[in-house]
Image (cartoon, rainbow, N blue to C red; front, side, top):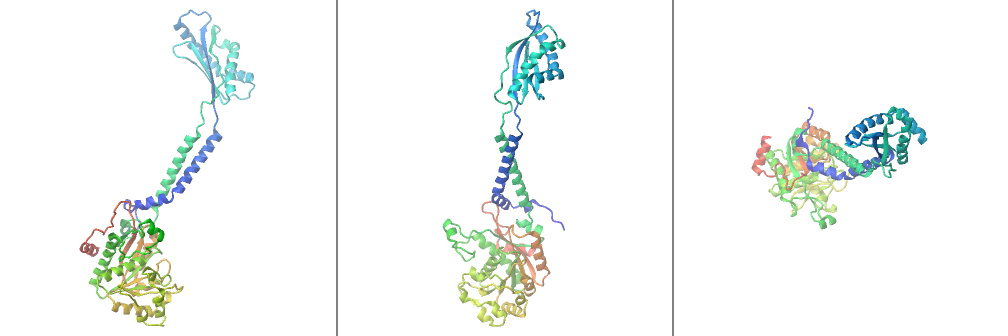
Length: 470
């Protein structure tokens, strides 16, 4: 079924983060717009210069009446305008000025309620504009038969050379305006790319886009909150046993643990839970350890198996020395027994089976009878067995383990893996013999203060009720 776009799937925090991260691209596009516009304006700019002169128009036999002179001037100027823009006048002016082309705008107009005529000539050359007025008036006498022979033109204001163009060059303002428009268009394009990127950005998207159960939401937790701690990188992993971890983070883990307990209560014989993700760095190992710790705090006996033998991480997260760990691959190869591999520490509160160094080829070991026997034995020794597995898009180890466990869950980091890859992993988990519990949306961030996840305010009983209804 084709997924429709929904406003509920828009993540404002992710959108803001993408725009801030790409600020340099917006600035570059805006700068390019400024430079290109500035260069174009300067290259294509054609200045225009205007010279003007004012003449008094009177009949030779003037009566002295202003009204009569005004009407006379109006009739003369109308004909004068037609003559000035005629081909014969333009040719005469070109001959006098010794030019082949005359790209000029020539006008003659009556100054309102007077008998004054204003002649203006606009060209791209200030000298040409100035000389053109003189050429027009010099040719008037010879061409006056086209007008009237009793009109007299007396100079009231002689023409002057224009020293500045009429259309002042203002590339800076226009260039900045175009640059801002280009930057705005780039911003909108980046915003559209962020919104349309096929990743999971919100809690609503998990159920709407993936058509699956949202098992829980774990909000973003800052590892090192002070500047000093960030420099020293004193906190390397988020554990609910740490005194600096927020109650919101702990509550999110506890809500997931409650749903696992509720599922186990309905089927007491099933207690092996597989945890995986689509890609690396989505937080599956952190979730596995914290869920195990949360169960242990409730008095449950928990065994945590680090089945990601290619890149084992749990011994680092719990700060366990390599020398104290017997690599589980020895057990799978038949070189030692379960008692030797099992790492027990009262301070941690959970039993661990893990590796300390990466192994290049583990698929055969994962699907071997030794792994099946290991899970079977652990199932009987503990109330809960948590199996941390490799990312499903990287290797096929997890797929081989899905039929060996009772339950599975998929950790999805907000705005990280692509939707189609997540759906492929969910389909594999649904097709396996184990029951798929749902997805955990991890490292969830929203653009509001003290934002809480969907289940953060639910009591334990309400959380169980919601999960039961789903």
